[in-house]
Amino acid sequence: MKRAWLASVTWPVVVEINRGICAPSRALHKATSDGYANTQQLWESSHRTEMSLPEAADLCRRCHRLAPFCNFNGNSFVAIIRQVVSGLQLPPDQLTAIRSVVGHIVAGTATPEEEEALRKTLETF
Image (cartoon, rainbow, N blue to C red; front, side, top):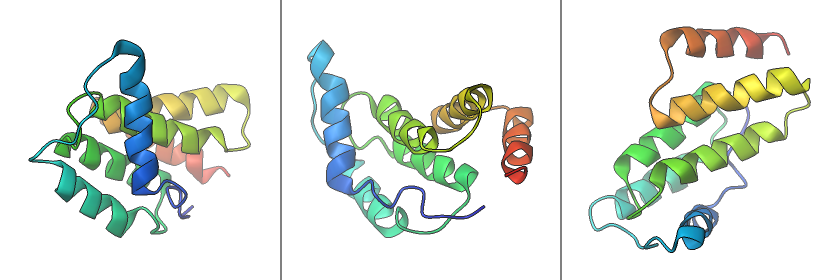
């Protein structure tokens, strides 16, 4: 199922999510000189595109790896994809499993088996 999963998450929203995640620990919220501009360009050119949920998670993973912020890049992009998934109307156990797998995809720790299970689950609705 393809849709514009990330369309409502503009770049300023991404920045604010990172700011919010940094605040409780007083971590430095600042753009990196190496990754910020490239990540912003990738996000702005892609986030409104219709894609599958695994593709949306992969976009978040790619942005995480580009490290646009000094701290909590992974947490920021995992929060984004999990927020998107939370809107799905699914039984709680399925929703929990999907949120976990997409978080692992963004973090770069998903196994091929987890990714395949996600694809199969998504085919059922």
